[in-house]
Amino acid sequence: MTPAPSSLRHRIARRHLQTLSIASAAALLAACAGFHPVEQNAKQIDAVSFAQPSAIGQAVATWPTDEWWLAYQDMQLNQLMQHALENSPTLAAAQARIARAQASANLSRAAELPQVGVGIDASYGRQSENYLIPHPPLGPAGQYISQGQAAVNFGYELDVWGKNAALIRAADAQVKAASFDRDAARLALTTSIARAYAQLAAQFEMRDVLDATQQQRRDIHKLIDQRVANGLDTKVEVKQAETNEAALRIEQEQLATAIKVTRLQLAVLAGDMPSAAESIKRPTMYGASFTVPANLPLDLLGRRPELAAQRARIAAAIGDKEAARAQFYPNINLNALIGFQAIGLGQLFNAGSQISSVGPAVRLPLFDGGRLQANYAAKASDIDAAVAQYNQSVLSAAQDVAEQLTRAADLAREEAATREALAAAEEAHRLATLRYKGGLSPYLTVLTVETQLLAQRRALASLKARRDDLQIALIRALGGGFAETSAAQALAQH
Figure 1 (cartoon, rainbow, N blue to C red):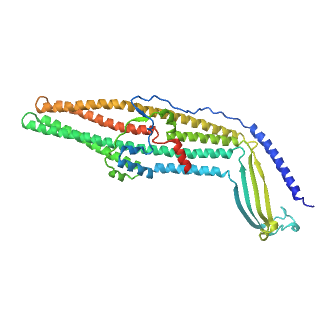
Figure 2: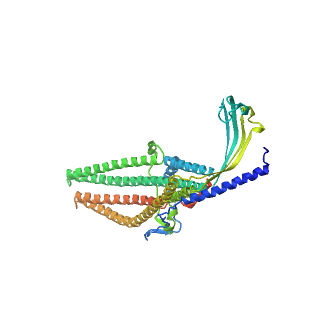
Figure 3: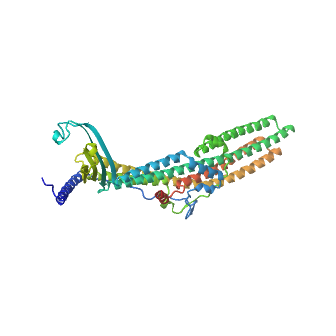
């Protein structure tokens, strides 16, 4: 039989490819018939609104900077922050999740590239006399022979329906979400350190209050001893003074323990062992004034890292849904092979042993029991869940900012009233002491006024601590220097 000319073989091949294309179109129609769209129910919140107290100053550009803690002008705090950012296991775990998400994105991108592989197969064994080559004249049936194949395989998936592109978009969005999660972890870590550090500062302030009160009580004790020696007082007043001093020493010991515990917390937050707590000295941080951006409601959604992360997860869920929809359509691949194949390894690389093939492959499930539709519906519900979670976070963020602003607005008035009360208590204590020295009032009056004075000193120290803590809480509520645009740009550069 005369072999067909090359042009004839090519025409036959083209005819076969046309037939395959028609079959693919028919399969596509069949696939579309089994698809049922799923509508989304949740609607994403795109703006926030709340009333800003008039007592809080507004400025054009007062968003926190990325290293907002530098405003406190405390070198030790700066060192703790830097050490924590370099050694925190929490941030290290967040960075590992970014690397994991990036690897998944690279894996998704690999599906868009041609896949080339080399395969080498060799075997030795007895050939069946009743299989492919049953008669000796046509081959070595019944004999022990060697055979092999060495070929280069090529495969390329045509992403006609955008499945791979959708998966890449979803994977890239997951990378962004992981990156924003790291920013959220960074903000949580730095604000936790700052709040613990402010608490330590407040504890030292309270220690000063107790020390000053203790000195006052010692001075009163000396006065009582003099009056007892002159027959003006009795041992009762002496015992009262001793009791008050002992009670204050108990408070001082309790406060010393609290200072040690706070130092331990700071050491661990900074990524150190507890032994490093002993090197933490008294803070020297200075509080900052309460001012907020004039465009706070407008820009808040782009300034909170956890909200940016959840928006990225919504985008990832949308990409997964689009990829699930594309699975209803035919999967078209181009495959090719070139190499050598022979019975008898000695002839494997002879010119006559060459093999080659090229052609498309179309695959489409005709009946899957509803698997594709169920998967598509699940991906659609993932979007609703992500949107609902995001909306809840938006509401929580708006509430967080509004609460901090309200507390900050009321704090100034409370602090002014406390200072007035403290000034009055100090004057009352001075007068009561003078009257006691002059024998015009009993020691009980001094004790009563001193109790009031100590209460007002405690109140003022507590207000200072609340002011610092509130300032840090407001910084966290405002995102701590995070900006979604700049964060995305930084991620793209990597």
